[in-house]
Image (cartoon, rainbow, N blue to C red; front, side, top):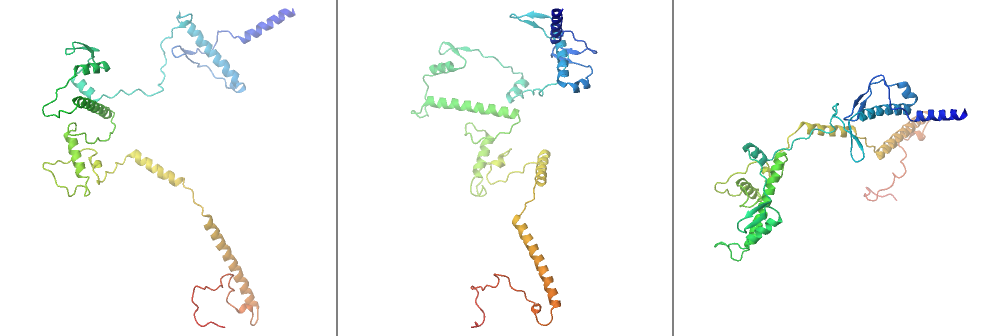
Amino acid sequence: MDIVKEVLEKQKKDLEKYKPITVKKHLEAVIDEGHLMVTDPNYFDDDKFKSDKEQYLLDLTRDNTQLLINSIWELPTEREEESVVAKLPAARMVLPRARKLPVPKPLTKWEQIAKAKGIKKRTRDKKVYDEVLDKWVPTYGYQRFKAEKEKDWIIEVPQNADPNKDMFAEKRDLRIERIAKNEISRMRNIARAKKIQTPRTGFLGPESASAKELVTAANIAKASTASVGVFQEKLSNEKQARGIGVKELMPGRKRKRTPVTIPGEKKRNMEIVNKVLNKKPKIDVEKAISLQKAEARAEREAAAGEEGGKKKGKGKGKGKGTFGRKKPKGGQGKRNHSKRAVGRKRR
């Protein structure tokens, strides 16, 4: 009988250790398999929570997790690489986003023109047929450069040009300059689309600069003299440079005052208030000591005056109380040798 009792007790302990998969609740829990989320609308027992916090939360979490696992096993499953996988349905509950919605990328100036005119981007072929070389060459890449070099192995020198001038170097410089100019235009378009202020460029040369940039450069050169362009003679048909940033480029000109904005003014006022409120009083130790010494000296002199008045009233005839002068303090009766003595010295 003892053996049977031990076996039953062991089985009872095993059953307590491994709880059943069936969970009973007063109100049915809302399970969203798409988000793997369980919402328990049942009553939260505060008394059990206060008596044993860890055990109560552990039991509650275990029951809700068991309900979620039971609902997952009811879904259609399939086997993939020796694993059973359940197909989760679409989520029923709408959750808020962790981040803000992505802002659409602004169109560049060329993209706006292409959209207005209906221009569509065409895909280029990787290779094109070159009639001069009589073969297929790549459209772009280093193989294309080799093909161009092979095609332009000779360049005609113009009649008015210097015969000793390297035409290959000039062609290479023009190509590099054209690439740089296109890159500057591309960056300007991106900055304009994103409404970013960019610094004004300098003089780009008469070949690549526009009429507006030439006028600006001429005005800056005129104002760069010692008189800031006051005594400079005006050219024929001279135009005055206009536009944003021209006055800032002119030397000796006053800059415009930045416009006052509400956030900037609020920030400035808050800085002043914080500076005033957080200001701690400065303690001058030497001044405090000197004031304390002066008060103590005044008290002593007042006390000495009262004692002298009492003695003067009590004494009869000539005595010490008849003298109204005070005895000089130590160190104050010394003779100043820098000053000349007045009168004849007594011997």
